Image (cartoon, rainbow, N blue to C red):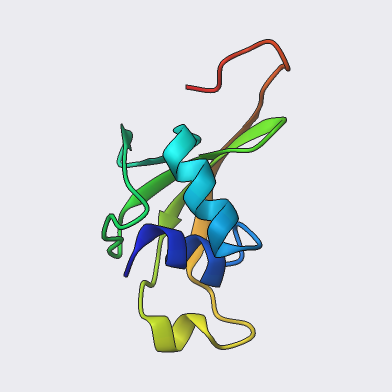
Length: 91
């Protein structure tokens, strides 16, 4: 599944277009590397997302689109979360 679509369906980012923009800006990393919105996500991958005031690190548990569309699907687990100061670079 595409990274931008996974972020939206997993409810980590509200809209797919916002996910695409964040990925293009370098605010999302897949396995520690910058990536493209079309990068493939698989079970076991580690994704880091830099929000405005925090960095969230998650492990992908499920990348099946049919499962992710279910209302209470569990698709990721949180590995780490750390605060980021406004003047600090997250990565």
